[in-house]
Image (cartoon, rainbow, N blue to C red; front, top):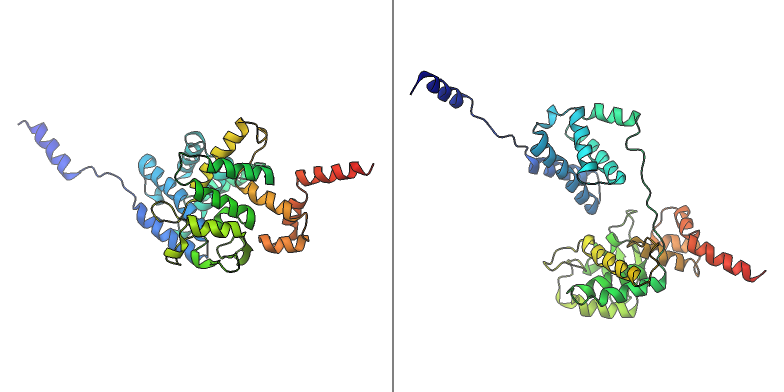
Length: 322
């Protein structure tokens, strides 16, 4: 063996190449602990952790630097990746931006400061996109339920249809319904105690006798531990809203294709709540509706009161007097 090869062997042994790796699990665990201490809702923390992991994975696999060595260009590269590769909306980019500001503040790292300052001056994350969605009428709601039930290829169609039915009857947000545990349901009074709400205040909502029978039959509540979630996945975990959303979107697609729902309407799962609140406002005082649906301000309820559909209906009534 010649001398050059010997020197190379000594050199490679003295400086072995080490593969870069962030301790992602530790960062996420510490971040979760801090967010829980901040009093954030479990559903919010879950979303924050998912987005934080996307960032940490990108640093680990693409940038390959310790967090304390990141710079302005690294953050530009990450947000460009979100926009171009992952096709993330401006709203979601804004969410990533705010989460990362908290993450680096918690970790006492100032490497993001230059990017924050520049982004603020250039108003990068101020241009929030507000996506309009339409109110779901009672007729459309009933058609959606019927379509979900007739998707015979799905073993979860009855469960998904029941979620949508309860969303309409209770006017609740989907996150509020999926966070309900069996112990929160009063089967004698047909009421549900919502504890994990957007406004951080408990409230009571009601449901029909028909839903009561469906809950008992479909969800088999009498044989389950009262601490378990009312709606669970096939693996007995808390049901994720994405599962219901997929069934809902598939139903909307079919109903638009067959002309039951106007193809120009944008119906999302929150449209159920919007439609039910609009219906309640036709018969109940606005202050009562505000409390029932969990709005902090009556101004929010007024938005529903002044929805396009209700205004059009009122205009038609005015025309009749002419």
